[in-house]
Length: 230
Image (cartoon, rainbow, N blue to C red):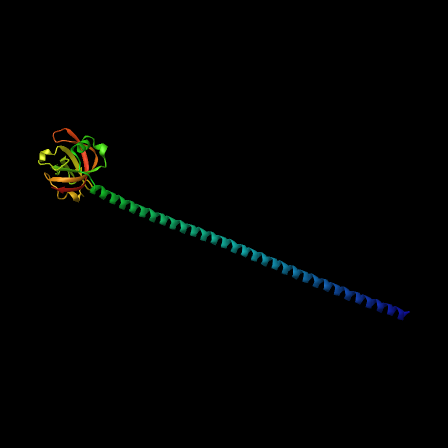
């Protein structure tokens, strides 16, 4: 009986030890599994974070590329606009220079082709200067006043349609201006009062001035294109 009890106790002890060992082994396996799962989750989380950062970096690069492209496009547009403005300015300057050249040539031709007048044609101009503005004609006359009172670029003359034999035959009182109307009028440098002259002149307008005796006179006003003593 004692032997049997001992055997039973031994068997029970062995079974208990085996059960304890199995339990410890299972716990260890579970801990290892949990650790592996935790490491896997951490690894996945790190991978996701890295992927997110890479995606953000890629997005920033795309935005930077877009901004750079937009800036480059804007700069190109500004450069093209400046180039176009420069071309337009050059074209305008060229047109202006051409227009001035043509106007100068036309003026020279108009002066060269200025007609001499008949007595009646000159009378029409004297009667109504404003009806003949811009007409360029040739007249003859005597400088009747060219002094400090008239100024350096203005003189008064008695004129006729042709070169008269006597000074008193020039019957039409007229006014003439030249250059800048003040002091720059080189075409009058050699002209003096009492000179008899041939004048190529353009009709400006009717001009009224006060006379020395207290009245006024309205006469044709011409601009001198060319003048020579005769």
